[in-house]
Image (cartoon, rainbow, N blue to C red; front, side):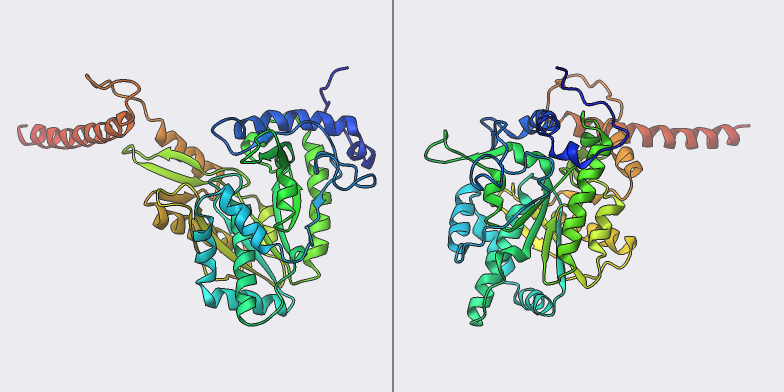
Length: 390
């Protein structure tokens, strides 16, 4: 039987309950997930083994069925020390991220006050790694728990922490450091951090996937309906990377490296503009030469798209200050396309410069700029002397 899905006129709830349709989507997501598995990555692929909640909540892999929109949080009390130890093993230097939050006492107090007042907090980041948003939310949870402990207050419960991730995560597992053959589903680990909501981001790569757009749309709408209902109860902390796609590395006209946060769609901005909601922007660089680092903005009210744009610009500035790499937010796809075009200027052949020389583009960019300036100056001077000698 062919595993191709034709573009459906209508997607019904039966399609979302269908193990066959879910398996076809699993195959496509597994293809995408291959970029995050292997010796140089932290993840291993997961087999098709959907979790049937009604039979055994621990059997199988969560999130592989299309009607899994939300993976509930693990409500076991006192998990914070375990989360911190596990995160430190997964990401060396994780404690530096946690310390950055905890040291910001005004921020900790503001968040706690807003949660007590039934207001929501949305946490948004740039997106250098597929797991950076989970790291940031885990660090924030641990910091708030530590802050509450100093004031002899009860910590915010696990089901008040929420994150949105690409549904592709349901195809990835984390190998045990001591026994690589033992692999835990990444979503099961995220249950320790909070409730996880699964989405189909409408990114450039996602649009090229062999998954019907209507199926994507229905799954996303159902997930957002569940999420909005929860956010309406108040006292929620929601984390996500607005772009839904990893930051892009490009070169500018002079061959100098720059990072670009990709465009954000209006649906994502609506989450940042929810009533009674403050937004915290976080610039994060997990691959920093001195270990993982982050820097956060003040809590901000995003009342319109312009305010959302400005917050993403602030996150780009935070990332640039952390890394020394010029970082930009592409407000529109045309911005990103223009920067990509700059990064692929025609090459000028230079004797003695090998085609695989890592400094080649930088050198060529500088030469190209110099040549352009030289031509311009020569043209102006030439016109001047021609007119003078007439």
